[in-house]
Image (tube, rainbow, N blue to C red; front, side, top):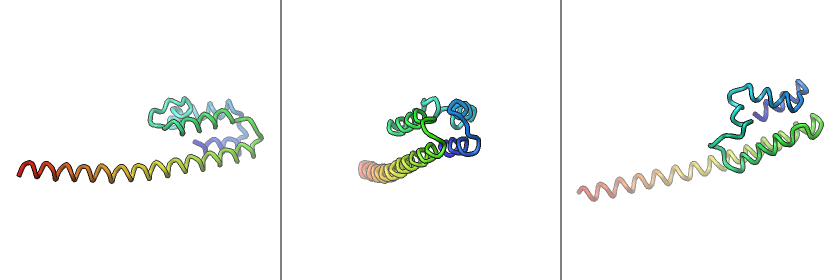
Length: 108
């Protein structure tokens, strides 16, 4: 979505209202613009609110730089979520194995 916004600013010189209308027309961005995504963490929702509130506050170059900064922050959040998921997957695998071993011992 951030790259879509950046493209609208760079190539079409869209206003904030035009950007929001364009994002709402696309299915994959609609829930993000409405900020009704139950799967997003609070930090991600906060970053989205910051992006939408800061649109139109500077010239096009400043906005594109700001969007690059937010894209980097989202990338950092994605990396930390992937690391957390990997850690939890190992935990669940270990718990599943231990539970299976425990049940096997009880059956024998």
